[in-house]
Length: 619
Picture (cartoon, helix red, strand yellow):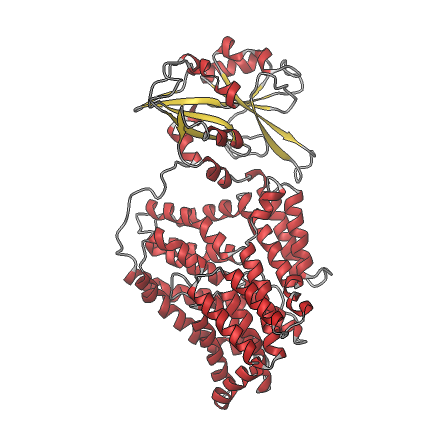
């Protein structure tokens, strides 16, 4: 028992110091338990085959798909626009929308998604963003308390209950607790944020030197002279190449790209591919050509070739999404010509961007002037900024040609942000299907199976660009940390250490009743979470809470809920959870801001939970 406790204390010390990665600490602790023969190899590696770990992997993939398809951004931005310029409504909607998204996907991902939306809306409402960003981070953690899959500690206490022979919790067993957390959070944060965060100084500087894709489209006015024409079954160019059309010479128009719906004709499986308009591209029925030029000339071109001029209210996939230059496989970026460039005084068409790098030049910014027409004839000057279009891989290749130009911003980082919007309905259906399988008992599917099915469907239906993109959404550090620490709870039970710790708690607080004992467990867990990750804290405290409840002969359910709530509701430090750290620079918060706002909330939340949990889950 002493060796187990020593390994546990040493691991906790390393977790607190943060000098060694948490997954490495977990694996070293696991090796220690093996070396001292406290656990057999089978027991030590059982965490990696645990259904909770597999479920977490699947949930990372499902959550990643919800972000990759733009579903979360679409829903949140539309709802938040309802707030208008009212500070109170905006505050309430930020809390409610963030918690709703956080109930189904990781709190870190939720905050990363919502942060730019909230900052933009706050500026539009004339409100200081710092008043909203800390509540945003806290609400993401509160939302995690609403469902079984909302946060890893929920899965930890579910696993502890099942292994102890108790009935498993349902998907929405956590909902009443989550709603109480949310209500408490709103009531406490409304005055605290007004007192301590409203007067913080604003910063107008850009957080990033690079421009977003939407900003580039607006700056160069690409949407103003962008039109789409569709090839129909009776159109003249059907089966011809773009070169044969010769639209640049005949009409002075540029065909930027060809958008093509491929794969199955079933809407659920349909995929959009973008192709640069190369001379040998053969046109097919249903192809959508993205054309730049004057509207009357584009209309004449469409009429001459029996093409359908799309009316600006339809896209190739859905009605009502407007006329815009969307980005999936193809993107745009700016490059600035160096004074030493060999292309100075060359015409654009002579530079060979199309032949050498497979990119189109869409526009030139020369000082404050934007050149968008007859680009082929324009001679390039030193310092010219060229807007180029191509596949993300080809744009990335331009960064290697550093003698002639410099690529502005980070094209590959922008590519990673591009969402597959046309797949949003698919992701929504799959997520609802997963929730239904987990909620309804008449569907004979285990929760881990439901998550695996959903994760696989997200990949197979193209909600990710490729399988590698799906793997990248998995936080392997968290998975290894969780799988490595799970056997620690087994070692604590096997050596009698958890009995000893729980016995000490019972001896100290048991005489004062189950509520006092639960309060001790809650605030012990809350204190640990300020220094150790909430997942590790829950793994360590769950068996102790279970044993403590069983020793005094009461139901362990409220005790385990005390563990998961205390582990998740940690607000007093910017480093206790990733969301807290994520909003710190954007909100210009200091450590003391978290103490002033987060510490009172954390204490009040604990007091409320000590009284509410026994009402929701009787002893």
